[in-house]
Length: 269
Image 1 (cartoon, rainbow, N blue to C red):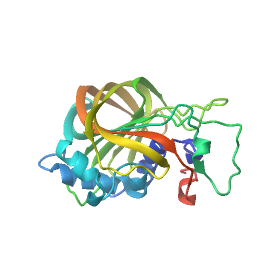
Image 2 (tube, rainbow, N blue to C red):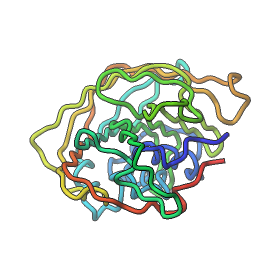
Image 3 (cartoon, rainbow, N blue to C red):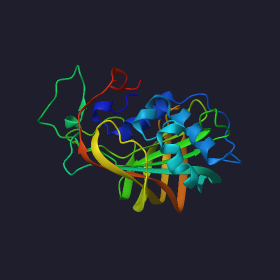
Image 4 (cartoon, rainbow, N blue to C red):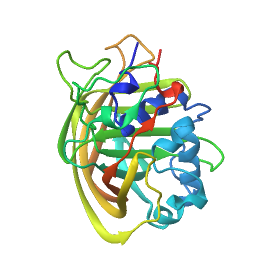
């Protein structure tokens, strides 16, 4: 299966694809248990793999851990009828109206097409995970993209013909080889910024902007389809009862061009 090319993805979307491609070494799920918040974040950092620089997940010294660690929440979700307690983190990134991906991301071997304006895509990412150790990737990890309000999911392998919109989508990972992508369902997101700022550095394509702690009010129900089996033969149902947890909201007020490395310009097999 060929996923959507990164050229047609927002930063959050590319990170989602990278999670599926590069996460490895997962063990059996044990739930959060007694793992502390900083250890859980370090585990998530390992799960992000090569896309660690694409989301504000980095080393403890870069400001992210100190900003969100004390506020990291746990939520209860239902996976195939069984209740699971998972760590929860919300991320939102806002751009100036009319921002085009083509004006930010430069691909050295691909001539720019000034006639195309691809919107930046889903601006919200919800990350849910279970970890047993700070020194191992998460045992289970779910990454859901969306927008404010209600987002609808459908199985996506390529962009629909004639559209410049980047669809929302979600991944679920359990173990080293068990991968699912959202087939249907909805997620309703309500995000509110707080007055507390955060010290997380802005991404390289942000020339100016700000970051604040935010609350994420989320609820939804999503059916995932296995990528490890014949499509349609293995489904997994996830329900997220309405719950509120903490996260970060980066508001980018001015952008600048960045060159996309070769490793992020190819399709996933």
